[in-house]
Figure 1 (cartoon, rainbow, N blue to C red):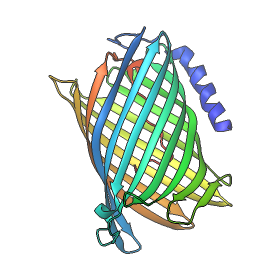
Figure 2 (figure 1 turned 45 degrees about the vertical axis):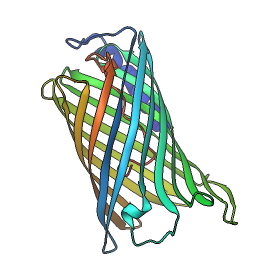
Figure 3 (figure 1 turned 90 degrees about the vertical axis):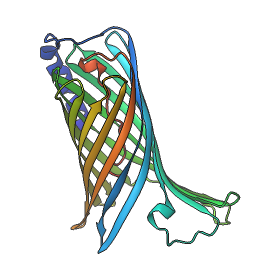
Length: 298
């Protein structure tokens, strides 16, 4: 909790000096409503124990923000998933269908300190799981997690801005439900805890082209053992001139390390995003990133 309190204090302290320095052509700062919805996919690939893996995933999501004066709120929803036979076609499930999914929701409470600085607090829920069903019988294995913390966007000028967050990762329950005769009660995960820090930088070359770099680090600890997740991502985006559509591509790297061993994974992705509303060009018109329990996979 000292990490959260420290960042919150820093945001409040620095904001006094920044609030009086306006961004040119900032746009609306009163009541506004804006957001985006996207459809895309990415491929996660790498090598573990001399065995190559390749996981194609579908990504669907939306982020919606509203602002009244300096106060605002943002809601996020996202889905990522893949079919088991996309990854392991040699696995014979008979007439059954298997899938791996991650569904997440995040709420942000925000406040604009002038036109350059936007700060917020977030609470997110994520459920990741494996489901196998033949339409009658099923087996569902799920892991529920919470993420919460504080975040900020600082707009350096109209073409450059940075984003940062720090928070806690709280795995809550592991559950198995089935019609196959082996029910298992929900298992609380009180002995697992973690934290996450992240940062991003965006540069706008012109009204059409932007480039973004992101870094996220998460550590999970259980029974005096820790697992570290480091994720790096570069994103190039193009805003169509005649439509509120953005076409983007991404390249990412993820490292998982524990007990002196590590696994490297890469991902490439593409996305089509529909933007709506009047966001303006100040910090208040920027959307916060969706917070995840683990970044770099989904």
